[in-house]
Length: 91
Image 1 (tube, helix red, strand yellow):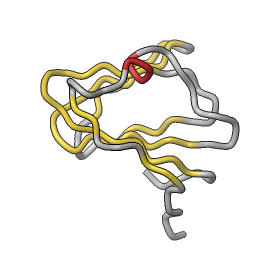
Image 2 (image 1 turned 45 degrees about the vertical axis):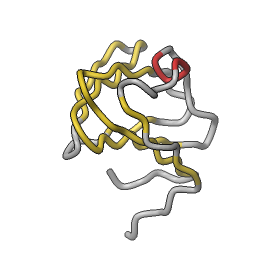
Image 3 (image 1 turned 135 degrees about the vertical axis):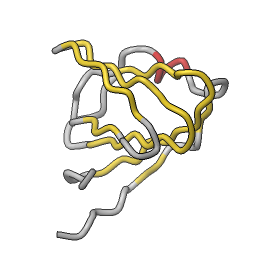
């Protein structure tokens, strides 16, 4: 099955330019999956309910399900981007 193409992507953010909105709890819309891709360094992807923390790296992207509450926390220097899909992506 081919990988669906993202319909939108964020700009590339680093530990300085990462918006406060992404550092605080937020969620994707209904029917929207997110794939958080770390380009350089590492990042914590945190899910508050149920409590789960994942460390993401360039070799380990993070999948965000539709309407799933989450927030991110940089671990030192990093660069990351989020791709948005309207169907379940292959991660």
